[in-house]
Length: 553
Image (cartoon, rainbow, N blue to C red; front, side, top):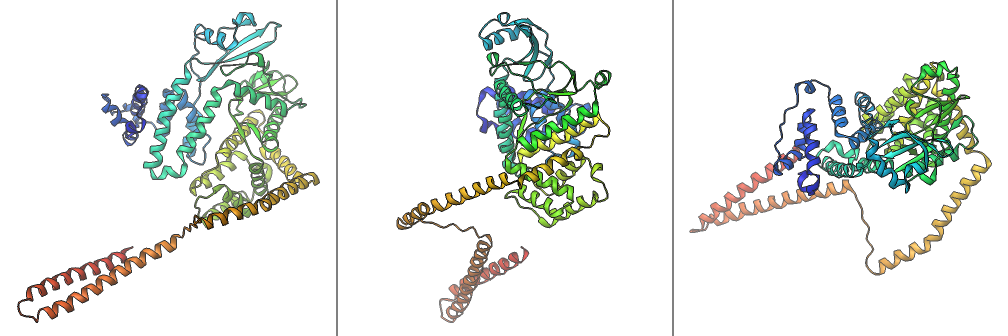
C-alpha cells in the first residue's frame, strides 16, 4: 500500500487533496489500485468515491487533463512531458496534454517584494529606474515583470513564485512512490519505465525551478548564434541573476501569437518562417543543443525580419552519436531506404525484445504509403507521428532524449505553416542532412574519427596486460567465476529433472508391486502386502497425472 511505502505523515494532506481531485474526475479505480484510498482511510479520512455526472460523461483523456490542471504546477508540467511521449500515448491523449498550460493568477507584488529584495541583496528601487508591479506574464513556476535599469535599458524580471519548492517536492515524493507501485503492480507499465521517466521529469523540473540554470542556457545559445544577424537571443544581466531571479534583456517586437500585427507591420512572413526553421534545425543537427518548445508564444518577431527566441527553461540535448542516428534516419526516409530506417529503429530499441519481422513489415508499409509523394509534399509532422505509431505498436520505447526532439520538430513545422502556408519543413531539413553527411567525409572529420578510433584501440591494448593480470590473480585465489545465462539449457534441465522423478517413482511403484506380491504369499503378512499395493496404486496415479499435466503445456 502507498501508506506503508511513503511513511511520511507530512505528505498526507497533499495526498488527500490528490485523491479527492482524482476521484472527482472519475479516477477512483486508479486511487484504489494504488492504495491511496486505504492509506487515507487508515489516517481517518472519509472519501466519497462518486464522480460528478458531468465529468463521468467526458472522455478519459479530457478527465485526466482537467484533473492535472486542478492538481497544480507539478502535474501540469508532468502532463506537458506526457505531451512529448508520442511513443507512449495515442494521438487523442497527446492533443489533450498539449492543452495543459501553466497560466495561473499572478502573485501580488507585495508578496514577491521581500523575495525580490533577498535575491537582489538590495532594495529594487536602488537597481531599477522603473519596475512595473503588475505582472506581464504569470506561470506556475515564475512570473514576469517589466523594468528598466538605471540607464533606461528595458529588461524583464523572471521571479520564482515564493513557496513553490515545498509543494513540488511533496508532489515528487508522492509521484515517485506511485511510479514504483505502477512498475511493480501493473505488468504493461514496466516496459515504459515509469520510475526512469519520473527521474527524467524530476531533473527537468528542478532545472526549471533553478532560474540560474535557464540563464546559463540562454548564454550558451547566444554563444552558438554569435555572428548570426537573423536570430536574436536575449542578453542576461548576471549581476542580478540567481536561482530565484532571472534578469534579461527585453525583446521589443511582435509576439509570435499576434500574426495580424506581423502582417500589418509589413514583415516578410515566408522569410520569418525560413529563418526560424533554419535556426532550430541548426540547434538540433549542428549544435546538438536545442530549444525544446519553439511554439509561437516563445517567439518574438523583430524589425528587419529577425527572429527572437525566449523562455529557455526547457531545452534538449543530443550527443554526436544520437545526432548521427537522426541524420541517418532522415536520410533513409528521404531516399525511401527501408533497411536504413529499420537499422536506426533497431538501435533505438536497445536491449528490448522486438519482433523484427513485424517491425520490418511496418516500416515497409510506411515507405510504401509515401512512395508516390514528392519530397516537397511530405510533411514532417505526420511522418514523425507515423514513425512513433510504429514504435508504439511494436512495444518499443522511444529514447528519452528523442521525445523532445520529435515534439520540437512537429511544433516547428506548425509554426512555419502559420507564417507561410507553402512552408515545407522537408525543404529546409534536406540541406542540413546533406550538409552533415558531406561533412562526415571531409578530411578533417575522417582524421578526427581515425584518431579517436586509434586512441580507443590503444587504450584497449594497453589495458590488456592489466586485465589479464587481474584475471589470473582472481583464478589463483579461486575467485574466478563464469556466469552463463542459458535459458534453453535451464528449461532442458527442468525437463530432465521431472523425467527422472517420474522414472524414480515408476521404479518404486514396480518394486512395491513385486514386493507386495511376495509378501502376500507369506501367512500373517498379507496386511502389509495390501498396504504396498495401495501405495503402488497411488504412485501410479501420480505418475499418470504428472505425464498428463506436462502434455498440457
